[in-house]
Image (cartoon, rainbow, N blue to C red):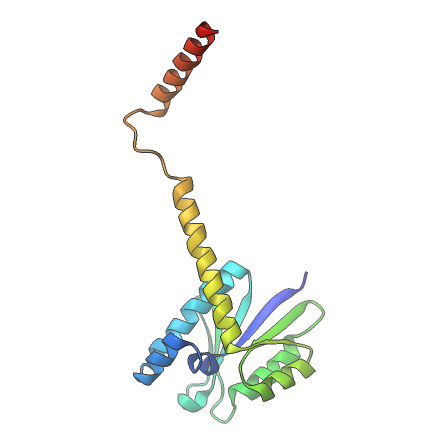
Length: 176
């Protein structure tokens, strides 16, 4: 099975996801970026994906850098390079017989370019819905695990319950 790599246009998601739009409107762009990375990290871990999140340096001039956060690769492009051109370049580099690249962007021109390089695409809204669904699965798994370890509130310990079960069985056997 091919390794799955998701390349995310970070500011495209921030401009489309409702809670991130609210942070952006309040001029809390750093908080919006961090919230995006946090949600993508949970999604990546649960779905078994590798994710690269790309941000334009135009909104944070002179910051070009690559680093890891929440087990994601985070890229701020060079000052004169757009996220789109960076994504187009690395899509061609990473998409191979062993790696399936999917690009998350709602930019139609960008989608056509990544299609031409053999990659798949998902829109900001589609990725948002997939993340919401995954978050629901995660919550269900947490609840299920909680009840797996749940022990009824009983004054009896396991040894006492076992003795009671044996007595009940003995009484049922006598009755027959």
